[in-house]
Amino acid sequence: MNQNEPNMLDDYSRAVIGAVEKVSQSVVKIDVHKKINEKQNINGQEIGSSGSGFIFTPDGFILTNSHVVQNAAEIGVVFPDGHNFQASIIGDDPGTDLAVVRIDAPDLIPVVLGDSQKIKVGQLVIAVGNPYGFQCTVTAGVVSALGRTLHSYTGRLLENVIQTDAALNPGSSGGPLINSNGEVIGVNTAMILPAQGICFATDINTAKIITAQLIKEGRVRRSYIGIAGQTVALHKRIVRYYNLSAEKGVLIVSVEKNSAAERAGLMICDIIIAFNEQVISGIDNLQSLLTEKLIGLKSKISIIRYTKKMTVAIIPDESK
Image (cartoon, rainbow, N blue to C red):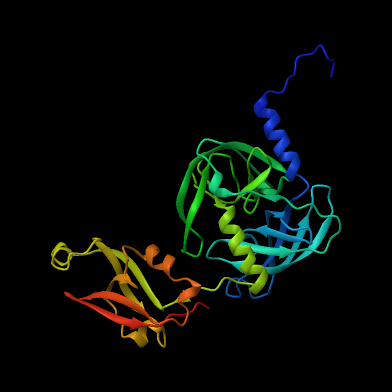
């Protein structure tokens, strides 16, 4: 460019370009051949789909979404320069919609992982991915909100989700959400349809914890008590009589046979109001407490049975 010509790039453009250049060699397209449900297809055919992912270690570990690779019969990883590698699944956690796959390839450049606790509402963010198969697509926006909650495709609650207006489309799932320094601060995971500008990413601090467990054990261990429940309002008289701090609880609608709940004597129509003396105001609240630490640990669960408040002992199993 001639020195006398004005600089046509503003600060915003330079920030986006600089950030994208730092991750462009690390973001990949993930092509997946999935097994079709036998009830739908008696010939055992497969269907193809694609998503995004990014290299986060120099030895070939790639972070993506669980829903991108679930039921995969074959996974191919395509780099922006066209190089293609076969990948294997290392671990998958549908509960957080995160998965780790691995390739055997030389000279890999991992992204730099940031700290999602330092994110501010309004700051510039950039999403990189492969929407509809268009590789290395870049969209930019701002952090719209922090601390959102969102349900994964399994129904489990995702907490501390980042909301952004950086556009996502099918195929963007699993790609990185980066800041102006090119650091990955989230994993793009979902958009709200038909709304525009409402997109979500799993914060990278959560992803760091999950990926460590996936690499070590191939899955994330959680405790499980064996009920199906739904959030319901408690009768006002019961709230006042027992001086309860929450006006909602979890109504048990089914109890699995040979489960921790059955062994504890829990019954259909019991309403769970506390677990280990922590108030339970909804099904998501209960799920968040059922962590790995409670597996095999004697715990206390408080319920309302008809109009009587009672507490029983329960020993959670490990989730399958």
